[in-house]
Each structure stands twice: as C-alpha cells, then as structure tokens.
Length: 363
Image (tube, rainbow, N blue to C red; front, top):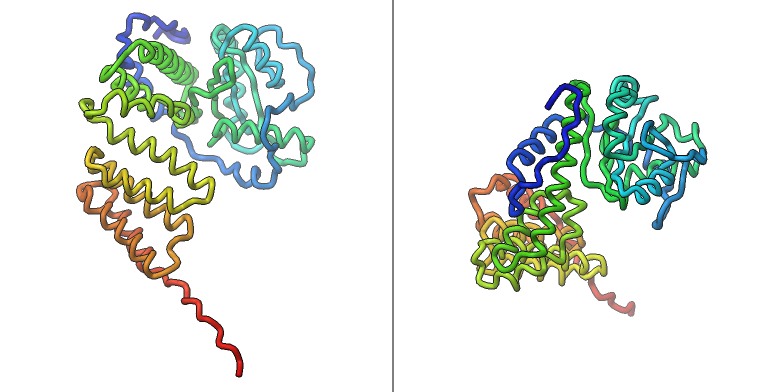
C-alpha cells in the first residue's frame, strides 16, 4: 500500500467459497493492533436512563445540512438519511476528548488530517460522537441518546471507529491505540471494509450452493462474522441438519448445539429453566455431537441450572455436579478443565435450603 493512499478493493476474483487468506491475515493483524485498554464508561452509563426501544432521533439539534462527506458532522440522524440516499456506508467515531487522555491528539492528528478526511469521505459518510465527561454538561436527552448509541454499537473504549452499512448495522470496529499512526488506522479500516465485502460475496455464493458445499460456506460465513452478525444467521444454522443429515461435513454437531442455544434462550426468556436445561443435555448426549461441543453443552446446562436458581435442594445440587463431571469427562484434554473443576467445587460448596416443615397445630 502506497503511503497515505487508500487501497481500492480489487478482490473480485477471490474464490467465493472462502474468505481470502490476505483478508483473514489482515483481520488478525487488525485485531492485534486494535486492542486497547477499556475505558471505564460504564459508570457513567449506569447513571443515565437509556431510551427504551425504537429509533432514536437527532440528538444534537444542529439542523446541519449534510451535503457531502468532507467533514465530520454531529447530526447522526442526518447522516443516516444521507447514507441511505447515497447508498454509502458510515464511518462513526466515538471520542472522549475531555476525559480519556487520548482523544484530543487523536482528533487533531487522525480525524482532522485533510488526506484522511478526503480518502474516508470517498467511501463513507462521516459522523462524530464525543462523550462528555459529565452528564450535567449537556441536556439530559442528548446524554441519553449518546449512550444509547454507545450501547447499541457495543462501544468498549474511546477513541473507536465503528463501521456501519447504509442500514446502520455495524460490521466492524477499529479501536485506536496510541501506537497507531495515520497509516495504521487507514490499513485497519481498509481491512475491516474488505472483510465485509468478502462476506457479502460469500452470502451470494451460499444462495447458489447446495448440500455439503452450502454447509461449508455457511460455516465459513459464521466463523468470519461478528457476534452481532452471527445472531442474524439462525436461518442458515437451522438449515444445516437438512443439508447434511449424515454429517458428511463433520459440522452437524456444532450447528445442532448452536440451534439448541437459540431454542434454550427462548425457554429462558419464558422462565422455563428446566426445558432449557433438558434440551442442552439432550444435545450433549447426541452421538453426532463432537466431544468438545458435548462438553460445552453439559457445562451450559449446569450453568443454566445455577443461573436459573435450580440449585436449591441437595438433589438438584448433586445433579448439577453430575452435569459438570460429564462435561469434564467428555473432553478431558480441554483447556477449560481447570475452570470446570473450579465450577464443580463452587456448586459442591452450596448449602441446600432447609426443607419446609409442616406446621403442627397448637394444642
């Protein structure tokens, strides 16, 4: 890549049955570069009443006319409309200029660099949200909406870039660190953008594929998607048992477990902890499920029991201990054995609630 020159995506000839090796490597490098100390913004968030549900409106009230992506604007609602009209993605940046000790120099040396704005503006609509140091420094509604967006896009640290498509769905994050120069930031954004385009191509290939080939492409898509994107792949996941009933791909157990997690989550939302646990135990005992996934299912069944308040009687405590022991035995070479043993000791140490005794009427 030439110095300060944004690469165009020229990967149209990439094999559609897999992400490019270069993109994968770039993504790994990006993850390594973008690790940053997590700023403690949750304390501020806890003091704010978040807007409940629905779309949120423009929160700065500037009425700015977003005519072109030649500068960072603060009217997010206007940028959303512009992105839809122009069918462009959005580059959203969060900063904490007043309190994080990094954002001030970042804004000056990265965000306001003329070449950076010029190159980013060609590909993205540009929007900037700065989180104030004090919730009292801005109107309450504005602060609520700022943190709504921070939570919506999973902000962990500032400064951070969030890459959004024209529908405002996140597909990448670049967290800035003090050792990243302008070129490194551009490379990280390009890598995230390239990976996203490869995923779009992959989805198109999945639509044309059948049988085992489709299963393998779905697995590639799943493994290269963000957590947010994975949550939207359930239709693909539920299709795999039909595509590969004989487990020729060796992936059937993995996706049976993922489907079970989805169904168990629905049980948990309804307060039906027993059904959620029993479903996970059935999957763990399914012979088509590999040992490492069987371990995961047994552990999750035990965890759901504890989380759902089932470990009250000695009988339940013993059963949960049995589930944890089955998890340990299912895959003894697992790197999680120490954690499982610790969990087992915690459950064993629980004291069952005293049995209820029928009151004897006074004579």
